[in-house]
Structure formats: structure tokens, C-alpha cells
Length: 191
Ligand code: 5GP
Image (cartoon, rainbow, N blue to C red):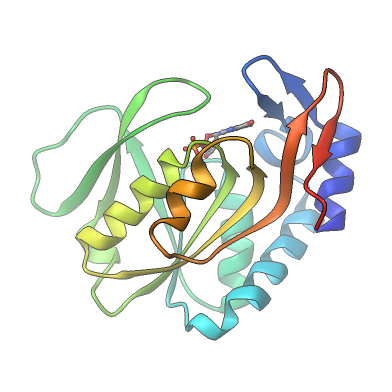
């Protein structure tokens, strides 16, 4: 998606540890016009999948996910990151390790928001090691629902996430695919 790639080139900052900082338009300040376009793009790509729910993981995926949910006219579910396991039988939980913080969380959703009839689209800001997306897939499977697609804003193709998700057979669509970082710039995969 050219609009997103241009924004990354203009405003992204490369940090140590292969982290791309996109605080001025995704993670801290949010560009609403960009998010609206992203929502339309994902909705068009996944429209044949008969999506019944969009899910994301708090908090950076919420803006593009709500725009996608509006475009598909379905509810958005936000998977929570609990710091501890909760012994309650009305929730599903699975552990994930955060790429940027290195902390382990219990990804959590209430049982009442997912059911076996659901075709779910997962939306997230980054794909790195695939921890967040894999955790989201596990929660959807615990509910007996179907993970029908994954929409990612920025994929770092040199990290193992894509391979891990491809092994599940779920369709992934990434809007900006990064091949590598140089000292001061971002090189995208030629599409
Ligand atoms: P994964 O679970 O695929 O290893 O990492 C994805 C999650 O880590 C995303 O939800 C995102 O919050 C965070 N993340 C991974 N890489 C980056 C990055 O380069 N920049 C930022 N801002 N977040 C990242």
C-alpha cells in the first residue's frame, strides 16, 4: 500500500533490535485518514471470506481494526493482555511474549464474544516473530471459531513470523513488507 510505505519512509525511525518506530502515525499519534484507507483495503481483500468478527490485540491494532470492522460492518473484539493467568471458566487465555517489551502476557478474551459460527479476521500493526498472531489464532481455536485471515500493516520479512503463520494455512495480507533495514533507511520487498 503506497500511502503506508510513503509514510514509513517519511516518518519511521529505525531503533536498535530491528524495531521500527512509527509513533507519529500508528502507535502514539494516529493518522485517521491512513487508518480509514487501511480499513477499506483489508475489507476489500478479505470480503469473500464472510468475516463475522474482526479481532485485534490491545492496543496498537485497535485503530486499523475498528476501521476494518466498520468497512466489513461487523463487531471488533479486543484481545486483552493480562499480566497473570486468571482462573475463571468464562474466559479463554493463552500466553504470548511481546516482541518489543520481552514480557509474557496471558492473551485473554471473554467466552461470550466468540462462538463456533464465527469467521474471524485478525488485524495487527506488526508481524515480527508471529507470537501475537499465533496467540490470537490459539484463542480463536479455543472458542471453536475459524481464523479466516490475518491483516498486518507492517511485516518484517526477515523475521520468522510469516513462515510460522503460513504453516497454519491462514491467508495473510501485509500492506508494507520490509525486506531489511539499512543504517538509516527502510528497504521494502519488491512486489
Ligand atoms: P510478534 O508477536 O510478531 O513477534 O510481534 C508483533 C507485535 O510486536 C506487534 O503487535 C507490535 O506491537 C510489536 N512489534 C513487533 N515489531 C515491532 C516494530 O518493529 N515496531 C513496533 N512499533 N512494534 C513492533
